Image (cartoon, rainbow, N blue to C red; front, top):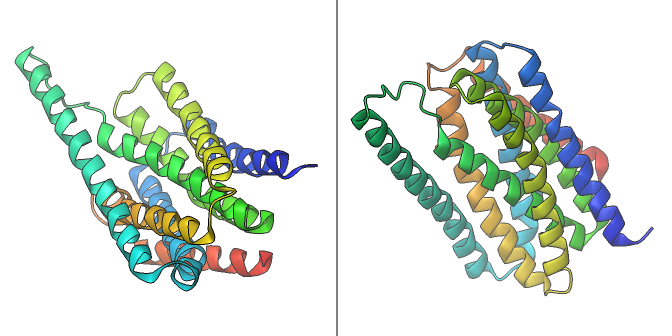
Amino acid sequence: MNDFVLVVSIAGLAAGLTYLGVPAAERFDVPHRLVSGALQFAAGIITALVAVTLMPPAIRNGPYVLTVLAFFVGGVLYVLLEHYTKQAQAERMAAAEALGATGSNEISLGLFAGILVDLFVDGVVIGIGATLSLLTGLVMALGMALSTAPLAFVTIAMARRQGMSAEHRRLLGWMFVASLMAGALLGYLVLQGQSLELRMVLVALASGFLITTVVQGIIPEANREGEPGFAGVLYIGGLSLYALLSLALQ
């Protein structure tokens, strides 16, 4: 079996595990505290992915200044994405109010857009990891799935609570799969023949985006209605579980 088919299989594994969160969210009506706890757990795993798997080799093997700069730029990109999606959402809410709508069930488009871009970046990271070694790609895929499956679950659960139609929720679920697969294939096919230094810079760029997603998007959403009990335990649990998985598969 050639490497391309293996990369597609690895990406498909991550996408399939991620999609499992969609029918689960459609079937079960979960309370906010459970959704919040799942978000905290996912945030811990993403943090560990950056701290354990992505940034250490990027710092060791990439050009140091460019790597740190790319990390910063990745965070800025998420902030800009969040700013413009919230701005567009505010304009839609204003238009709805002008037409007499209350806007009380307005969908959190900024968060959803950020999650889709986050999944695409996750896929790119899997693809970049696969260019280093297929085992690295597999470790990243499994680690990503531990965070993206609960993230898919809580995203669909939030969409239900905010009044998104079933048809649009199904479309959103398939967009999770498409984002991960597209990112993984792009990361692998485009970067396979590129220099190690360039790949490390891009890993740092993705890391900055992911860690800012945690700080600016996932944790604030988890704590929107008050921080759940044992939130810190769930966050650290996600961190620890990913670290153990990474160690076991090395």
